[in-house]
Length: 246
Image (cartoon, rainbow, N blue to C red; front, top):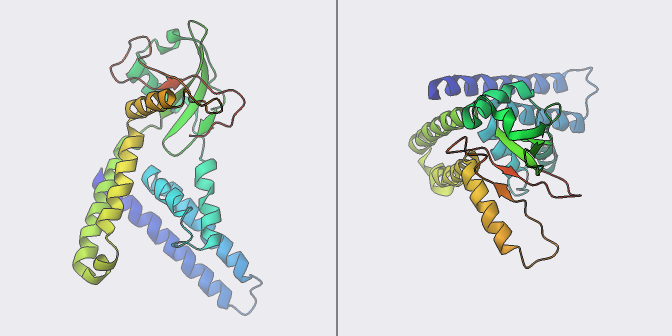
């Protein structure tokens, strides 16, 4: 997986570089009508699209960078902010194997209804669907995108290797910016997000802590789901009248 991810990363980065060279050549042409703003917008869009092609780990890095004006120009941050709200929606059929693996081949029997035509929300690691349990409880079901776990682990390996190379060829850079420590922060966050049972436990703790506040509502995590799985998909009761975001 790591070697495959390394090749894929190299192809995407090379494509990004070629697009940048093409823009630079075009801007120097005698008949160009492109403004600096046009070039910046194209560059920012190309960076966002490259991160989406690279997968969940890089999308998460892009989301983090979108909040860091000290690292990233404003025109790039505005484009990277789209990674938070406008993830590509995958067909529900691609999530069925995950449901069958976690809840069993008869997973539909756990629900009165399951709205599969349109997800309630979509993000880099998962999609969320509205459903109703057999007892009539309305809920949402969060399903991890197929292949996300292996992709993220492969990318972590590739980035670790890149960090070691940087340490050897540019030791002074590593003295100023501890790339290993930076990756540790991102990797810990990604490991937490990949483990939905940990997320459900955090929701339970947050719900308990928020009981005394009238204006704070935390969805109830429903685990396990009818005993089908030792590591079930988290479901939760949807908050009413609020924007739902993964």
